[in-house]
Length: 244
Ligand code: SF4
Image 1 (cartoon, protein in one colour):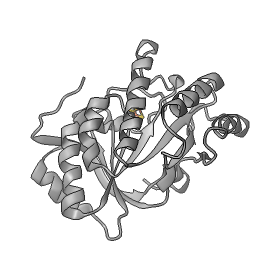
Image 2 (cartoon, protein in one colour):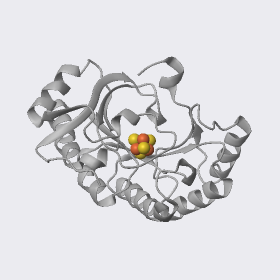
Image 3 (tube, rainbow, N blue to C red):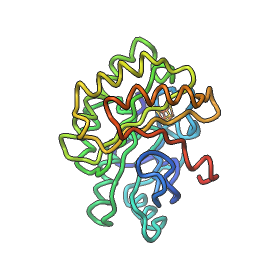
């Protein structure tokens, strides 16, 4: 697993743009893209951020100054994204604490939730959690490791809810995503949590790689709807409007 010295942070990029995914799509958002991800989603669109030495290395004071410099008026939230932000979870703790307590803006994490112990450490400093459940056709991990990933994702979901975070679920689907796998996942999730405990369930179609047909998307929708009527199919807005 990739590691980073805990007195520094490796940041791929920081910028302000329009949130393009999920239930807060359309909000003005600052993105802090942390470098590093050991996972291997076949539709990953931030491959430049996967190496832990991508981007620039900052002391925490330098990173805080950079955040203040990049911050625009009326920013709704700050996203910790990646890469996979839990790789540098200690840095997320320090920077999220600074953003919440010193700047006073909502913090948001988007994570593949591969390690629930790390997630527990960052959670006190996060307001909004996007819990992503990876389907096996994403090839995120080897088939042998998939069950362990799912267990961690479920634990993170439960922890976020128990700690009263605004919590929603995202699943990226392709045309190869199996109906049975989605059905099993949804039964698993709603056997674990109540359907009033989440703020949303988003089906996100893959972009330019094995894109699902409308019929396929509606099949996925129909599987989730009996469990959670507020399910939404939402493509990535930023790719449609050409935002970063
Ligand atoms: S978890 Fe995210 S950053 Fe890592 S490979 Fe998958 S899509 Fe890319």
